Structures are given as C-alpha cells and as structure tokens.
Amino acid sequence: MTLAAPAHSLPRNMTFDADDWLILARCWHPVALVRDLGTQPLGVTLLDVPLVLYRAGDAIVVADDLCPHRGVPLSMGKGDGQSVACAYHGFRFGQQGRCVRVPAHPENAIPGKLNLRTYPAVERYGLIWTCLRPDEAPPVIPPMPHWNDPAYQQINCPFIDIAGFAGRQVEGFIDVAHFAFVHTDTFADPENPVVPPYKTHLTPDGFEAEYRSSVGNYPIGKADRGRPGFEWLRHFRVHVPFTATLEIHFPDNGRLVIMNAASPVSARQTRMFAPMCRNFDKELPLQDVYDFNLRVFEEDRALVEAQKPENLPLDPTLEAHVMADRSSIAYRRALRTMGLSQFFTA
Image (cartoon, rainbow, N blue to C red; front, side):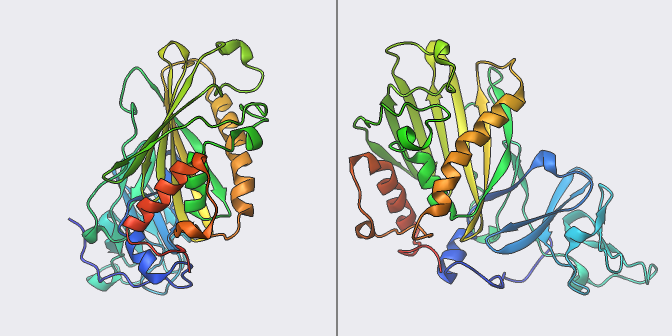
C-alpha cells in the first residue's frame, strides 16, 4: 500500500514551462540502471525534481531526496539494504518511505509527517522507471521487442549524460540523414548520404517508420562481416515523449534492438539509457558493445549539445525540413498531440 501524499507542487528552479512539466510528469521515465543501485542510496534527478533511490528488502523505493525533518538530502545518508538513514540526525526510512526510527526518541511514536513522499518504482529492461504524477497516468512503460526472448542476449549499456534537451536527443536518434556526416568514424559511409523514400505510420503512443538502405551497421573495419548488395532494414518505434527503439535487420536473420530511453533530468540536461538485445555475436565481450555504443552516442552528443535553439520547436514553420525529415516531423506532431507547448521549454 502506497502512503498518501499531498499533490506535488512544481519543482524549485524549474527549467520547463509549467504546463509542459505537468504533462511530462504524468509519463513514465527511467532514472537509473538496476545494477547501479546497491545497498547505499542513489541520488538522481527527473524533471528538475531531486529523487533518492534505495533498497528496502526486495523493494526499490523512489522518494523525494529530502529528509522531512531538516531538509538534508537522503542521498547523503547510508543504507543497509533494508532502509536508509539521514546523515544529519539518523532518522531511518524503510518500506514505502515510512519513517521507522528516530534515534533521539527510540521509544516514542513516530508521526506520519515524517514519512517520505514516494513514487512508484518499476524494473524493466534493467532500468528503474518512475512517474511523478502516477495518479494521473496509466502504468504504461514503452515496450522493447525481443527483450524477453530467450534466443536473444540482453545488454545494459552504461548511461550517457548529455547537456541538451531530451527531445533534441531523441530526434537525433531517429534521424536517418546524418549517418554519412556524423558517424563516419564508427559505422557509416561518407560516400553514401542518400536517404531512400520512407513513410511513417501513427500508433496510439507515437509512430513507426521502416527505413531501408545499403548503409551497414557493422563497425568500421568489419567490412568482412557485411554482404555486398545487402539491404539493411531499420525499424523505428517511437513512444512519446522520449523513448524510441530501433530494430536493425542483419544478414542471416540477425537482429539488434536498441532502446533510446532519454530521461529528462531538466530541460537542458538528459541522461540517456540504452538497453540492447541481439540474437548474434552473443559470445563476444560485453565491454566491446559498451565501447562501440559509447563512441556512436558521443558522436551524436557533440551535435545535440551544439544545437540552437536548445529546445525543440514544435511549430513546423520554425525550422526548415526536407523529405528525409519525415520521422522528425512525425515526432514533433506526436508531441504536439500530447498538448506540449510550441517551444517545449521555458
């Protein structure tokens, strides 16, 4: 049973437009890798709201990173796998954020005002997901193809921090025209910039697009792994506001699925998580996957952090577009359908 808590006020030093924040707070977002949460508390930020994550037995607790006694961040405290203790006065909090011990008065009843404000925690794809306004949101977390398929290897890459807006980062992930100019040190061919025609298809929570081309997805130097004349199919599934999956079809029925789950730390900071699964090369070292994934996303990050305006203009007349931008146009249209503002940030 979740403890009752008052309606959430807007965060201090908010970087979002207030109406946008209220919409985004109804959505589910990843905030941490499950493996990164041990016995000690973990401080994260979502939509300008500081949160603390800690383990309470088999449960993961997500709460405001603030001791209700004197306002010290609980992420500064110490955990034991069952609870977390505030660094200032040792107040200890356990299941569901309930205060279970006040060291200065161990025999006294503990007032309910000392309980933490908590949020739901769901483990999915090796990530911890939460929602800041769960009473106004259905418990929907974007699906990931093949994640539970025993024929596939599941991989959780380390997260990447980006000094840019989540919407810009997601739009870059689904962009199909930048390979020949941004990813030539990793997998793309600078002599192959042409984007063949493709279409987008609306879905209840976003859109899908299938893009076919001769641009491979093997690392540079792995040309022997390719196949002359092979047509690569990239199947994008976009779930607004900030999650997209890319399923890449390799030769011999190989499949690689990459989830781009952009967590909006603020309107100007993004923590990008990238769970993956594949049905080939399962015997290769995971560190090779981590290293290659980091190189690809570092190439993207440099561009996202340099974009102006920093926000994502949802009005289609505010930036120029070409035919290759069908996915970007569909993404911005889907965000407008959510009711988000034309500029999407404060």
